[in-house]
Image 1 (cartoon, rainbow, N blue to C red):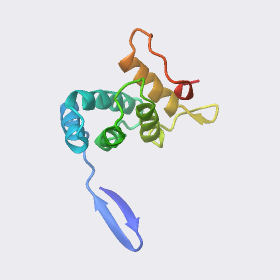
Image 2: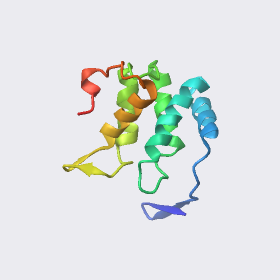
Image 3: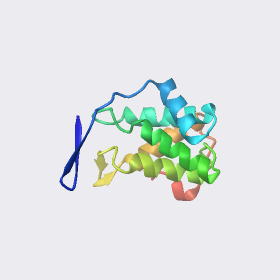
Image 4: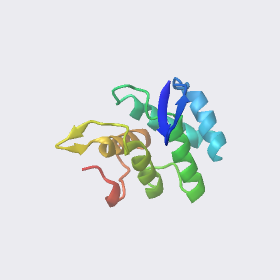
Length: 135
């Protein structure tokens, strides 16, 4: 059980295993209002990012929901062309999920952008907006 302390009160929450991909898709779509085909793209990126981590349990379906809700709420598109989508993925996935560093800098941002490019641009034709390109 995971435990958190809030003032003098201890809060315990059961640790849950990750759901399968289709369950994550259904949850993300239901919680955000995005169509399942759009939620499926988000879940694929989050799932691949999860595999990069050491304990392979984070990010969870919550990351899928957060990304999907922001995209739905801001009228964005699940696309490598959409700066809201790119920034949201980097913010949600890169915040503390991947602890690996290169020259003292987290590689999370670079890996998020690489995964998005892989999922949306297998032929290498699409270019990221200048502000979102991985270095």
